[in-house]
Amino acid sequence: MLPKSELKGALVIPVCHLDDLPEGESVRLSTEPPIAVFRTAGALYAIDDTCSHQDASLSEGWLEGCFVECPLHAALFDLRTGQPTCLPARRPVRTHRVSVDDSGFVHVEVAADARAATREGSAA
Amino acid sequence: MKTVAVVGASLAGLYAARALRAEGYDGRLVIIGDELHRPYDRPPLSKEFLTGAMDEDQLALSDAGEEAELNAEWLLGVRAQGLDARGRALRLDGGRTVTADGVVIATGATPRRLPGAAALSGVHTLRTLDDARALRAELTGRQSARVVVVGAGFIGSEVASSCVALGHHVTVVEAAPLPLLPQLGEAMATICASLHADRGVRLITGTSVAALSGAGAVTGVQLTDGRLLPADVVVVGIGAAPTTGWLDGSALAVDDGVLCDGGGVTTLPQVVAVGDVARVAGTRSEHWTSATEQPTVAVRNLLAGRTVEAARPLPYFWSDQYGVRIQFAGRRPADCTVRITDGTPEERSFLAVYERPDGTVTAALALNRPRAFMRLRRELTSGVPAGHASRSR
Image (cartoon, rainbow over all chains, first blue to last red; front, side, top):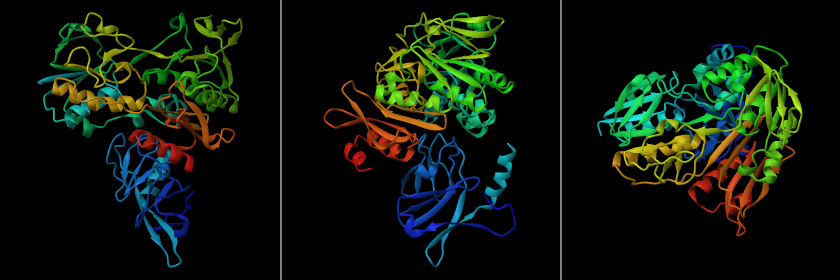
């Protein structure tokens, strides 16, 4: 769960050391909503983990270039934008900023609208 | 072509309409659906929708923006009653006729019912949103009900799982000695059958239903072995028959589905069939993925006026039950054997491969092992021998 505070400042979540996230792998953060962090050839990306089509974890998807394919119905998402590039997904997933600190530790800055969405989601 | 009619406004029908526009068809497009609802996704009906975790607005397959782009005439709540011998005139409810020079048949399947079920309240089948609304209202409107699910296929098992999650007492009755035997084979079907007991659901196999008891409302299920199961709610999930009755009198060949070649083309070149209703090159599949994959090819053939393309997609299905995601892809030839390559049945997380005597992998089954499964499914789809990859994991 995310901290309750909703200050203007960015909410940054530590993920793991870069060495623990080999190229082509991903890690799922049990935030609310969950976030998936991917390491591709040369870049790190973070998106909401739950496919916008149906309940499936994108961190378990197939990584190809900067795209991930949903493990349940093969919807494809662009990790850079969160946009689906093919059906059955029609809505984007949120993207989050990823950074690596001087010690090589990976952090995710949770997008502000994801926090807003959490509130909407819990009311549904 | 000036007018194409798509008969059926569910998954396969919508995908056919999308495919028509994607292929550049810009003529009149008429979509006829016997339900009043806009296209919606059925898989959640037995799962998240039934438990209340998902609501109706989340089921929509399309949105206003896409519908505007499709530029179709939607005739919803209207049933097709017939197709003339030339395959050009569709007869609809109320005597209305639609004349088309191309027809896509996507009328799906109709659940089989038990004799006497119609006369009793509390007996449900589950296919449509209206079915699911009625069942959900009954299940959420009471506590600790005695639910009997007839049929331990995917829908029956998923409904049983949802009922347990809602706090009901559930018994599942299956006529076969083992559920899912034709799909999974004995070893894997045995493991899947054991999932019911994980959540306290009683599974009775090898006996069928003799009669439903009750006057007005159902009170029990009488089994052929003499047992009487008391029941407040009965859900019947004993399969579905392709919805082809309306094609009586047409020139189409029908035999447990509309007969098509490998490209979805029927005995008339300007009529194609897709989804649950279609028997494509001898095989009829009632899977979500087939309904989304067949229309692309069928529509190309329809617009070409002959079969220019055939497809033999890899069968794939999944089921969520008792907190376990089951995924299966591929074909199971008679001479194949199965072995677990990753994980164990006890932890409810494993990958199994089906192999021919020469080691060729033809199918994969996973329980809660989505990543390994997906790798193998991709290899099976691409045709690259999956044997080595599966062994290395």
